[in-house]
Every structure is written in C-alpha cells, then in structure tokens.
Length: 272
Image 1 (spheres, rainbow, N blue to C red):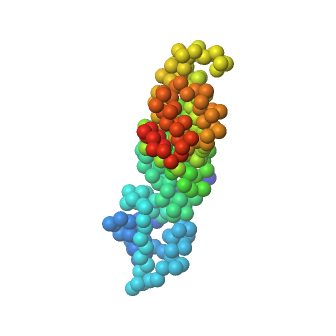
Image 2 (image 1 turned 180 degrees about the vertical axis):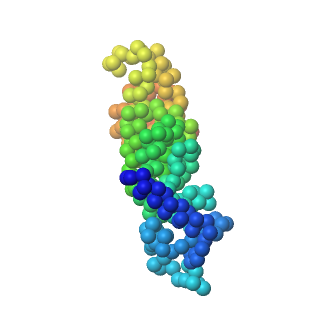
Image 3 (image 1 turned 90 degrees about the vertical axis):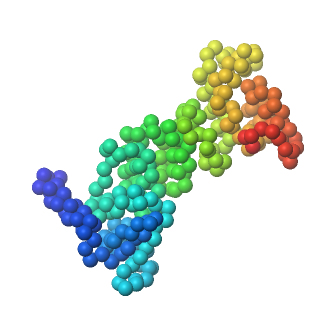
C-alpha cells in the first residue's frame, strides 16, 4: 500500500473515531452493565453480524433503537466498539489477560477477523501466558467453534507436554467437563511424562523394585491426587492403573477397587 493511501486511510479512521466520540446524530443506545453507549446503526449494521441481526428485529422507540449486551464488560466493549468504528486495535503493550477477555465478546459480536487475529497474536507472542493459564484457556476455547487456533494449541500441549497442564496456576480449579479427553488418556500422558522425568527407571515394568515406584510417586506427587480415577472404566483401571498401584497409596487404591466392585458405596477419596 502506498504512503498516500496509508495517510488517507488514517484520516478516514480518525473521522469515524471522532463520530464515535461526538455521538453526532446517533440512533442506537447500547447498554453494557450500567453504562450507555450512543452509536450509529449504519456502522453497527455493516461491521457486526450480531448488530445486523439485532437491528433487523428490534423496534424503535422515539426513533432510537435500544440494545442490551450481556456477558460483556464495559472495558471490553470500549475496545471493541472503537475497533468497529475505526478498524484499529492495539495489541502491543496490552496485558494478555485483557486480549484473552476480548475473545468471547468479539465472537459474540460476530467479529470473526478479530477473533482470528487475537488468537494468532496470543499464540505467537504470549504462549507462556497461555500455558500458565492452561485450564482457563482450554475451558474457554472449547466452548465455541471459532477458536480453532487456540483449540489446536491446547490439544498439542495436552498430548505432548502434560507437565505444563499440572504446572498451570489454575489447574486445581478444573471442572469435570473442562477437558474433552478421556481420563484414561490423561493417565497415560501423566505416566509417560513421569517416566521421562524420573531417572534410572528400567524400561521393563516387570523389573521395577520398590525404589523405582517410590521415585515415580515422588515425581508425580502433585499429579496423582488430581486424576479422576472414578471416571475411568474398570477395564482401563485393570490394564493401565493397576500396574502402577504402588504410586497411588493403599487408601486410594482400595477406594478405586471398592468403587469398581460396588459403585454405590461411599468412598473417602476426593477425586470422584
């Protein structure tokens, strides 16, 4: 793009930024939490599929259309409405948490190009933050089909680097439906990672002694209590977990076997 074209587009963008600030001849009021935004239907209609749908169905009152947004913070909407009017948004110097918080409202407003842009920026520039907040990121990105970039990012981590999941600072808040993967698969990845992190383990499990199991148990001490053993099929317990029962401790293993034999029995272990 030529320098002249760039300058003209800059002026064009600034003109619409002024229109947003002056609210001249507005005909739409958007309510976000306890704040009102006076906006223009032509711009909203053209730039957002959400507003296009709303403007086609909402009835005018005194020549003003009123729309209420839910599940959107004032801070996020200020950023997004400026983007809608000007086509501009700044990523540099912005906290990754702020950008991540824009994903869902951007998607709700039908700003597909922005959703893709935010995902790409976070993956390329803020991967360490995404790993640190793995549970939050995973849970959010699998709620919508438009977060394919982050879905792939998280799935790759889950498959290749399970230690990053358990080291994330919010893993203990994970909910039952957050991880869309079988519990036995998580167990496989945890055991695989534990072996890789524990030196001098025989490759043949039949050759392991008590010290080997104790070493693996020490490596996985933060992970073992977080697996949902009671969500695993009995067959997987027998084939995958039983060979490593020594790392679980006698109480947990007793509860697991008791639950398999008598599913209605109350147990003391917390990860049910």
